[in-house]
Image (tube, rainbow, N blue to C red; front, side):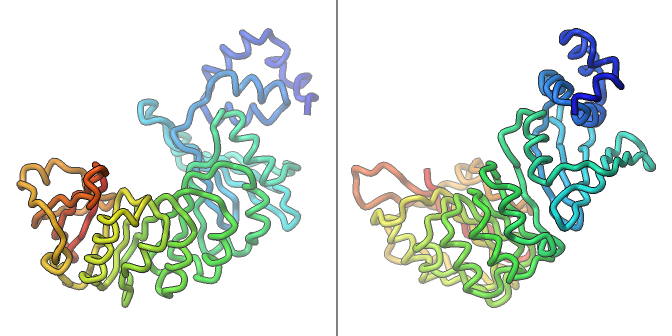
Length: 339
């Protein structure tokens, strides 16, 4: 690898000069340069390349997306790794919208594994891990065990399973990849056992996006038995009595980790607020207080129908929860914020 020094006089200059020159390069050029030698790799790292997030998309090619900080006004860099069955990278492409329509750089015969590439990118970026690992239907061809070995011991903030993934693939991947947060398309949780498996896998937060889940009811048992801290889900049904029992369990101190629960119902189904709050001590909130409160990750226009505060039964426990009922374009939403 060090043979690159002879072909590139830049690497024969003093470190301070090299760092100054590299600092003037475009980020994508810095990435290419880092591949030439061990010294080049360290020099690029010393420049302080920054990325607001390092994302990995696994399709036919293993893709990195380097998202630059907003203040830099740079387009994301997409690095495609075309891998062989032996897990070596046979072809590398780098693309950036800054280069124009036809600007795609390609290099062949990089004898690095997928894991080598991940370690290389996290090193030169001085980035702690992968912000998002995004899996599609084509990810299945890569193989779950190969994927697990490729990202082993890496910090992965979020794993996203798109609508093109199969339920079978989801069930294989979820227990193998360690991550605190999961985003999963509603198409994958049609089967109750899939949703139950997700709920019981000790994720810190779960987002179920996409269309509402036909025939899916978020029940008390489904959320009460999990250790999830935040759940954001869409479904076609809402068991108001089950949620009432769940809130009573929370009030009794039996639900420990939850800090946010959001359930959106489609198909015109309405929350039964009276059933949700039946025999549950609560204090109604003035509308101006509710409108100042943050709402969930889904960004539709909302109309607030009302809200209240519930407190723990044990007066020594000062934890309380805000309950908010809202109307959105396709239905209604129930939200609970623990404060």
